Length: 167
Image (cartoon, rainbow, N blue to C red; front, side, top):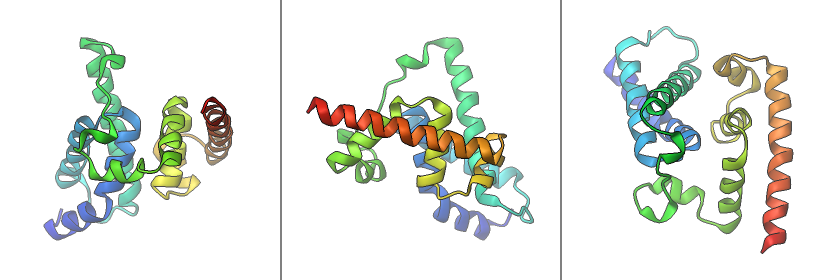
């Protein structure tokens, strides 16, 4: 792969790939490592004629996360994986996202969703991917993406209303 093309891909998509991985693993260090590995794979194997490099990067990042999770589960429980917090100062990007109270609530609500709904919503709203692109990445139908997005938004609304009532 051309170094200039890789540099362009990295600058254009690193933040969103990193945020996507953060949404999956809730750990800034792991997300950073997996994001770097995603671009390393791009350097080693992505064909310049590939039609949708962005979707391919998301697919690679997702696969790397699930491979990491399987490997980690063999040695310990994923629930033992330390979660990063916004006040650690290690992640400027994540700090900006969860800066306001409402965004913090949204972030907490998203963490409560099942992995499929969370992935769909993250790819749709933070990755700005179409339902067809999400369907290709997750290996499901576009209709399933639409249903999962609807259910996820409905669950988030219920969770956030509950959080508001608890305040």
